[in-house]
Amino acid sequence: MALNPTIMQAVEKLGYRVTVGDVATQAGLNIAQANQSLLTLAADAGGHLQVADSGDIVYLFPQNFRAILRNKYLRLRLQEWWNNVWKVMFYLIRISFGIFLIASIALISITIIIIITAANSDRDSDNRGSSYNGGFFFFPDLFWYLSPNYDGYSQERRRQRREKSELNFFEAVFSFLFGDGYPNANLEERRWREIATVIRSNRGAVAAEQIAPYLDDIGKGYTKEYEDYMLPVLIKFNGEPKVSPEGQIVYYFPELQVSAAKKSRQSVPVYLEELLWRFSAATSGQIMLSAGLGILNFVGALVLGSLLRDGTIAAQLGGLVAFVQGIYWLLLAYGIGFLGIPIVRYFWIQSRNRKITERNRDRLSRARLLANAGAELQQKIEYAHQFAAEKVIEDEDLVYSTETDLMEQEAGERSKQIEAEWLRQLERGSEE
Image (spheres, rainbow, N blue to C red):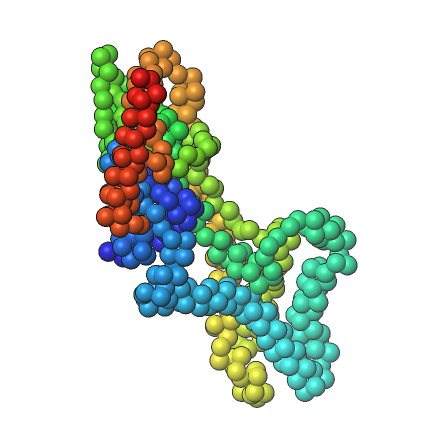
């Protein structure tokens, strides 16, 4: 079985001494998967098993277990190397779009200047020259509009300087084009982590209504007769249903009642809130600059296309102009895509955010029903408290550990028993 990075991260966060319930809660995994992964990790990383007198098992790992695994497995070393390489490659991909935008604008501008200069030197007609100049002077006009000298824009830029952004220009261009990734990539992990935390906060026994604010696709009548939505939770955390004398069902989870260390009560949101999609993490100034340069690039490509339309100028001038003639459709496609992709993405984000808002509203409504629980629900929650328990396995609770030899442990137990018997005899002698 392959090592699970989520399990390793959970072990580190929990202080290298964990139970299955600890890891299942931290990582949001089901009990069976957490148990199997811990066994695999303990076997490969030199971990130890500690058995309490109650039969519960604690896993103890060395703090350098990642170094042990790296020395043991070449695959892990290669994976870490590739992750570092991919970070560099992905960053180069991100900034390449901004670099190509600047290069495209520069190439288009220089080509137009070359064509106009050549045309003006070959022709003496003022009308002809002025028509070319009129087409070209669009660029200084637009640059002037985007410059700080433009009063309205300078006020906007002063306001934007107060905004903070962690993105440089090239990263902002990529963010303008493609956004910053799915904001709920870890939604399922977060969902199960919050559910497990709620169960633990209630000492391993809950009513279904306490879990409902973290689930989806429950339906309108979830508080009445049907609690089928609890089945995945029972399967994931090895839960058991219990029926009260009034016919109400509650659920308790034995594995989540056992912990390797006493922990302070964790805060948990009252419902699972999905994050809305953001158009871009760039500031408004960076977005305006990216859009302005995109418009400049697109209009420049149209102007250049009109100059290269018959192909004779490229044939006469050759060199850079001929090269640009050959890649013109690539430049035009990039200009169209640079503006088209953000526009399509904007409307797509609006549609997605409406659905996310609706799901958040449904989960929030269940949280409000729980907060305003009636007498029937309160009775149900009180019945669940009968199965609530919390057990912390301390060192004195251990009867066996793989850290030391079994013979030594048995000898230690015998010496403890002899010492206890000797103390009892002394107490009897003092009483007589």
